[in-house]
Image (cartoon, rainbow over all chains, first blue to last red; front, side, top):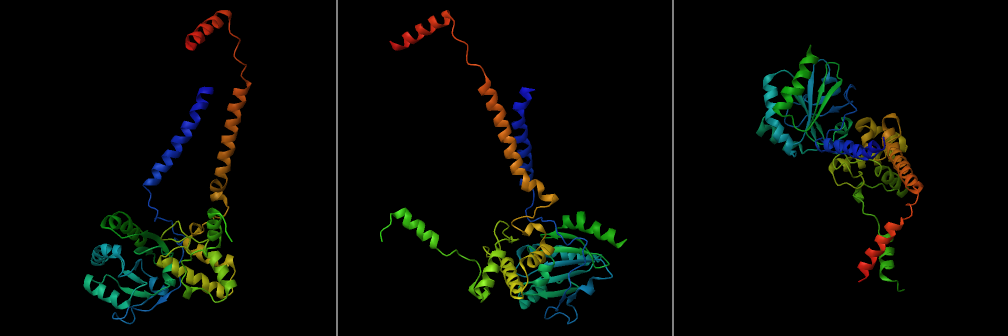
Length: 179
Length: 155
């Protein structure tokens, strides 16, 4: 009994070390969103100049169809990294992608879309201080939200959508929601 | 006035105005409101840098939140209303001082529980040590060997 008492600190240390070791592999950006299962925030963002005038993004546009809302900016390096995947998703045609152009120069955003391709059905412009993006709980671009037919946020992905994230995580959720 | 140097340094440090990340142009004109906004901002985590408050961070998102906090203060909202606005969007994570509730009890009480456990363990160990009888007196034979050893060493 006494012997085992001496082992107690060692056991406690091992448990603590186990948690810390696990912590090394967590992504500190992966903060659980409080918006899951809540309706999309009230918004009515103007269209990006140079795209059709009626292609802005309002809350009502997100009802009736499962959609992917992507917060991006032409200044954002990971967004450029993510862009080819968005183009592929658009080509697949399973879900419309809507963009929120966050804290951006509209002219630069338009040039960026013209140069890299435009995967978005609608693009709403959200200049500083980015109220709508903050309503979405944005922590950095890119961030993507899966919105169901009722206009309720069902999933949030922080960081670029890679082909792997799309295939393994987002697409299955979208297929499920479309049933 | 001649102070010893460390004291002079301490006085200077105490008087130094804290550096704010907030630009003068985003600060509120009314010093009382600005002080409230600053105090509140100090409690809100910058979501980009994560270990700084929005008042201390230079990130764009922190600047946006500072501006929005000041708008709400200027509109006459209370601290708790503004905190609710931010928590509604970012969760409790955004509060640098997490609220006490069921899910955070371990966080708040854990350190004290650990301290109590450690004190208890220490008390047990020391009580046992203190309670041990003194070593039994040496036998005549042992005393003789000790004398020999000590004599050897003295040479």
